[in-house]
Length: 318
Ligand SMILES: Nc1ncnc2c1ncn2[C@@H]1O[C@H](COP(=O)(O)OP(=O)(O)OP(=O)(O)O)[C@@H](O)[C@H]1O
Picture 1 (tube, protein in one colour):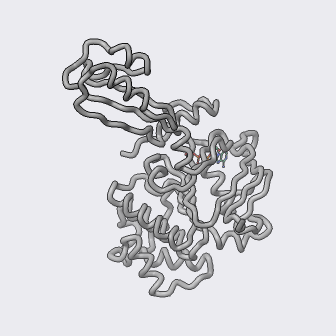
Picture 2 (picture 1 turned 120 degrees about the horizontal axis):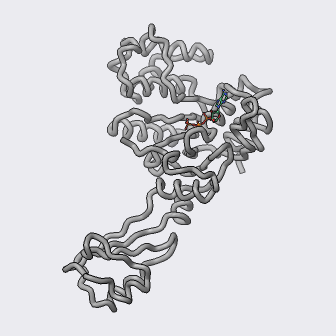
Picture 3 (picture 1 turned 180 degrees about the vertical axis):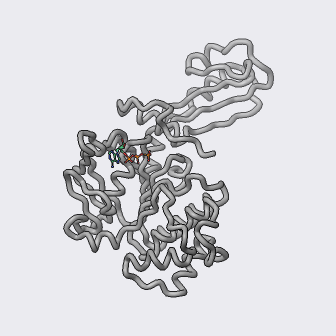
C-alpha cells in the first residue's frame, strides 16, 4: 500500500474548553478527490488548518506524505495548497503580482509558461494586469485557487471552493479540479453544496461535532443508503389504492393520478411491479428517482445522534 498523502491518527483540537476535533483518524490516498462534509461548526476548517500547519493539534498525529506536520513543517507546508473559505487579498496588487508574491512565500520560481498556464486554467488571462480590487467575486475565488497552486502542491485543500460562484463557473472549476486530479494532485474539498460532492468526490467523510461519522466510497455510500422511489402515472385517477398495492406500501399522490412506492437501498421494485400487474390499474408512464446525496447526508447525521437539524444541514446550491 503506498504511503497515504495525508494521515491523521486520533487528532484532537481544543480551543480553551471547547473540543473542536474529538479524535479523527483518516487516511487520504494519492490521486483521490475526498469530500469532507459536515454542518456548520463541525470542524472541517479546523482539520484543514491542522494539516496545512496553520493550527496545531492538541493531541494525535498528522502526517503529509509520511512526514510529521510539526517536526517537518517546511516539507509538509510545501506539499500542501489551501484555498481558504474567505477571500483575503491584498487589494493593492494585480493578479500577476499576487501570484508572484505567493510564489515568493514558497521560494519557488514562477516562469512565464507556468504563470500563463495558471491564468488560462482559471480563465484569468484577460485580468492578468487588473488590480485584485477590480475582480468579480468569482474571479477572486479563481485567483485564490491560483495562489494555492503556484507551488504545485501534492495535495490541494479546497474549503468551500464554489461558494458564491455562478453555475457556469462552478462547472468550469469542477472540470479544472478533475484535470488537476488527473495530473496527480490529490484533492480534499469541503462543501455545503452536496451536489458538488456528489459530482466530484471519490470518497466522502462526514464529520459532526468533531467526530468522523462516516467514511466511505461515494458509490458504496449511495448504494448502501440511497433508497429509490417509483412513481407510476395512471391513465385515469384512482379513487382508492387497490389492496395489492397497499400491501407493498404504495401510496396515492396527485389526487390519485400517481401511485408512488419506495424501495429500501439495494432493494428492487419486483414485488411492486407484480402488484401493479395484479391490481389491474392502467399505467401510462413510470419514473424512478434515487435519493440524492443531500438526503443521504441528512439521514446519516440524524442516525449519528448528532441531533443535526435540517437547518444545520448544508444549504442548497442557489
Ligand atoms: N480560533 C478558535 N477559537 C475558538 N473556537 C474556534 C476557533 N476556530 C474554530 N472554533 C470553533 O471550532 C468549531 C469548528 O469550527 P470549524 O471552523 O472547523 O467548523 P467548519 O466545519 O469548518 O464550519 P463551517 O462549515 O461553518 O465552515 C466551531 O464551533 C468553531 O466556533
